[in-house]
Length: 252
Image 1 (cartoon, helix red, strand yellow):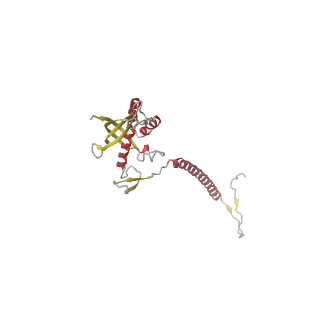
Image 2: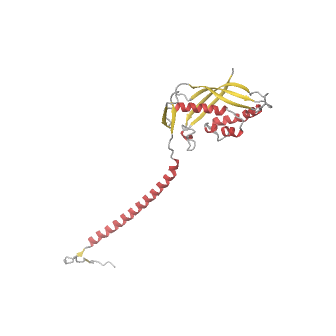
Image 3: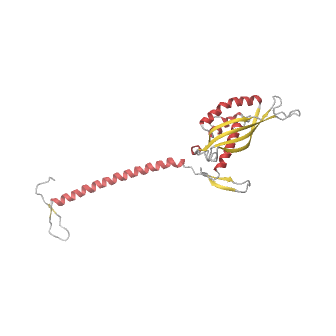
């Protein structure tokens, strides 16, 4: 309907039968403004609801992505005395009371892994090659230095048909109570078999020739939480890693 000048809108009579009155232009404009206001408020609410829905979907997708990566630290039983009966249960964390004892134990195992040799090539590859336990417990620089000595040592042991075991003699900290450098003294036993006596069961066969050597190793180690992967966190609960290593033989 076209708008005419000085037009008047007749108000519909109510149930009381009161005389109808004319609605002025001011009232019409106010009502029109209210309709426009509520219309835009409705659109704004619909927009906010859509944004909230999108945000909720994104949050759910992020949770599905993060939940599989959440790790719950297991508990570990640590012996605090010489008796097998007294143990303490602790949650694994970098500030646990038995942290130093665990680090010392890992240092002993690390020295044994680097120096023990058995006549099983598949087993030695799992220990010494890239991706094995030695590389897992070493920084890249330390393992790179160790990898250069693997082949000559293996060739020498295979040539002599020998195997080697390790005995840890002592472990002590070097450079004060807060130092990260440790000194480990250990002893190696080389078992050498002759060509015609290897695994022989004859009466004339004798045991292997045993060569004893004394060594000292200086180890710099720390706990790196990034080494605590989901499938190896129980193998290396504190993230033990060696960042410096030097080993030398002690002359008798």
